[in-house]
Image (cartoon, rainbow, N blue to C red; front, side, top):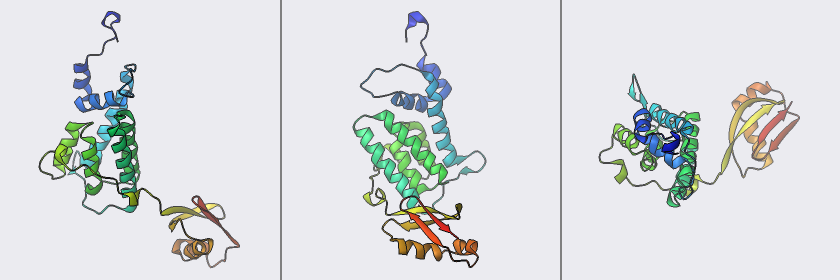
Amino acid sequence: MSKSKFNVDNPDDLVYKYGADTFRMYEMFLGPIEQSKPWDTKGIEGVNRFLKKLWRMCMDEQKGLVVTDEPATVAELRVLHKAIKKISEDTERFSFNTAVSAFMILLNDLSDLKCRKKEILTPLLIMLSPYAPHIAEELYHALGYEGSVVTADYPQADEKYLTESEKEYPVSINGKMRTTIVISLSATQDEVESIVMSNEVVQRWLDQKTPKKVIYVKNKMINLVV
C-alpha cells in the first residue's frame, strides 16, 4: 500500500467496521509472519464470518447462552484433540496463518456434529484467546468461569483421541445406503458380518432374506448383496 497511490486502508476504519478481533486475526491469517505479503481486505470477511459463527454456537439472540453441560462424545473429542495438537504446534512455531485455518476447520467440524458442549468449547476459547482475545474473554465468562481466559490452563492433546481405533461405516444393501455402524478397525471379515447382521436396521431392510454376499472394504464401506 502507498499513500501516494491512494490505496491505503486505515486500520481504525477496519476495526470500527469489523472489530479488533477480526482485524487482529486477519493479520495473522495473511501468511507466514516472517514473509512480506500483499494486503488485501477481501479475505477479512471470512475471518469475520468465523467469529460470528463461533458467537452463534455459544449465544442465541433470544435464548442467550445455548451451551450445554452434556458430556462430549468420542467423535467430538477426536475433532477437538486433533485441533489442539495442530494449533499448539503451529502457534509454537509462529505459523499463525495455518493455526487460523485449523480453527476454521474445527468450528466447521463441530457445526457438522451439532456440538454446543462446554467441555469442547472451553478449550477452544482458551486456544483462541491469543488470536481473538476480546470474544474469547467474553464467551469464557458467559460460560460461567471466573478470572481471565488468558490465565486458564492451556489444553493438551490426548494421544488416545489422535489415533483412530474404530470407524463409522456406511452400510448399503444392493448399493443403497441404509444405515451406519461403528466398527473396530481391527475387526475381521467374520466379525464385521456378525455385527452387521445383528443390526436392527439391517435386519429390517433385509426382511428375513439372507444376503448372498457381504462386501467389506476396510476403512471405506460395507455392502450387502441380496
